[in-house]
Image 1 (tube, protein in one colour):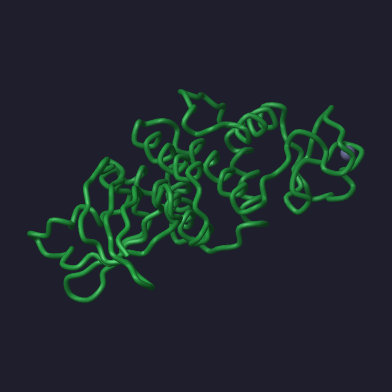
Image 2 (spheres, rainbow, N blue to C red):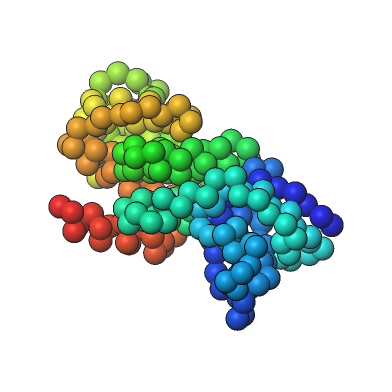
Length: 248
Ligand SMILES: [Zn+2]
């Protein structure tokens, strides 16, 4: 059967001497694996289509298993994301997260648009840490672990300071904090932003300035949630952590 999809390359690997196998996160068909024959040859028409983060239109033939690319057109090459180290590191993490967490049959136009907006925003030079945190929240939601920051998950209270309990799936108010004593208390700034991010569509992200202290808290909060619910060991995250240490 012949398919025509729009999608973003989230994984690309060599296969044999001349071929590549790419995983494309598509707008309409979830994740698909496509073999691109001859992609590694210098004169290949399709070589550029196999590069990580490329957004394109892919025509492929598939009976079962992997598809075989028959034709492709680049919509947005996102080449800047591959050339600049910091951008490449954050984009790789977003791609790897999408690849490892979302299931093959999980087709979602919304999630596709979120990934697309995530990469485009990084390319536009918006704060990559904030963009990635927003995307992590979308991934948590897609995986069925969307956290509740609005009101206490135990009693429903929405007033006062809140602590983030990853294992409870959201925040605990002062009265209920004893249920998870290890839950860190969020500052007002961090809580406000988490509530905003939880609802925000990445396509609507404007220029945003966040204080370093708040950023640190946001990072800690997302790390807790991701470690609790998305238990995968990502190479790209280890790299981001190393890069962070280096810049501090
Ligand atoms: Zn409570």
